[in-house]
Length: 551
Image 1 (cartoon, helix red, strand yellow):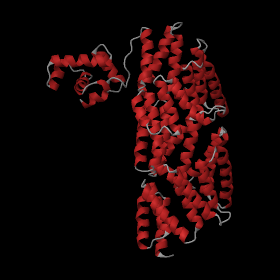
Image 2 (cartoon, rainbow, N blue to C red):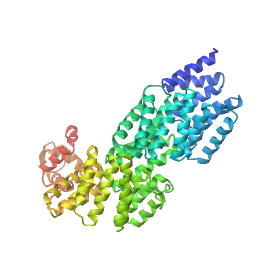
Image 3 (cartoon, one colour):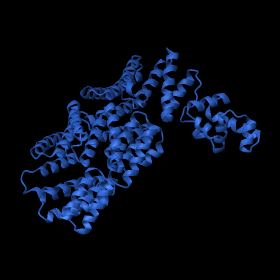
Image 4 (cartoon, rainbow, N blue to C red):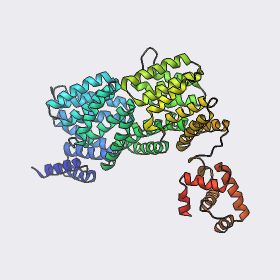
């Protein structure tokens, strides 16, 4: 073994243990001492993990050129197939992707049956094929992988096979394939890049299937893996998927943190994927009632399929149901039975149709949503279908609607603070307000608490208005009071909750007692309480004891 070969082997071992800084130093030195395709490829892989994507591509292209010129068409084709997908991830350049795929096909044209054919076809199908075609290609890739004993290709093909089956509504068998792929990943049988990709495929499948438990488990596992191995690509992708999920389940503060961090990571890396995180953030803004901000975020992304849902939700929130319906029509062509991908669109379409007085059509769409729920046995879809039926009955004045809202809540026991569950509570309160006011008050208070906790201002006001009609005084929740206080009011509030008198506060802040009294009056008004005691109680409930500790 030559000295350069020994260094390359040391660099490969550094890659295997995810020691990116050490591997970088080794491969850079190898290139200086004697440029080889192996050294260029090693450095390209290291830089990809370090989120230096453009330099990574340059070095891997140099490796591709080196292998091609030396006659190693198989290795050159394998890199070309990888670079092809990266064109979309980095620049959203589909034409460049097609060009690189074509180059890989030409290189393998005279090579006969080989494992690289499996990698190329799987990569192509993952980007270009319908689920039926991806299922077939993935199955063929598994056979090739077993024939040539390529554990990485076999595991990734299993993951894509599972993803294809989930897309086709075969959720049980698809998830079984994905679970098997994850076993390989967790057993340390695969390289880090394959593991990272399997995580991404699993998260997408969980999101599509509405598998709430699996989604939360694998998002946490992926986040931990990304942190331990400094995988910015997986970290950003995971945060985007998890942020979208947190939005649906009503964990909006965490969703905002995840999505904004994903955008930051994509900004310095795979910028072509940034749009998806921005679109999900726009959807969160619509939920929050921040419609102007959502409109700004969506501007320029109207041609993205991901943008259909937040755009339609935005138009509906602005009282334009027919425009919202036209937007959804782009993704729900007439004459075609909806697929699992369109489930979230169906749920929103029910709301739009009811708003537009098209109740019969809303009932038909609700039936399609229920069919999808039965097909994949998803608690989330069952809950959404029950909500849709309940809203239709409520619109028709049918008191039996309350049973559908109760059914929705039963499917959401694991996510009882979600927006969907909170809306079900509020719908029940609306139905019960005439015949059973105490029950209506109970459900409305529960809905209000959830809406205030996540910052759903529009929904919270709707719940508060109902409670006022029922003769109940409402108190602002955790997210409303402190944000409205001025800096000086915040200082007074901090001292007030420690129990200081007006005289003591005046001495502490070098103000007159009359000024302190004026500030306290303003604070009580903004907090929506009547006395100092209620203000202190509200601070305790909201966790504002931190003010006391800093006083």
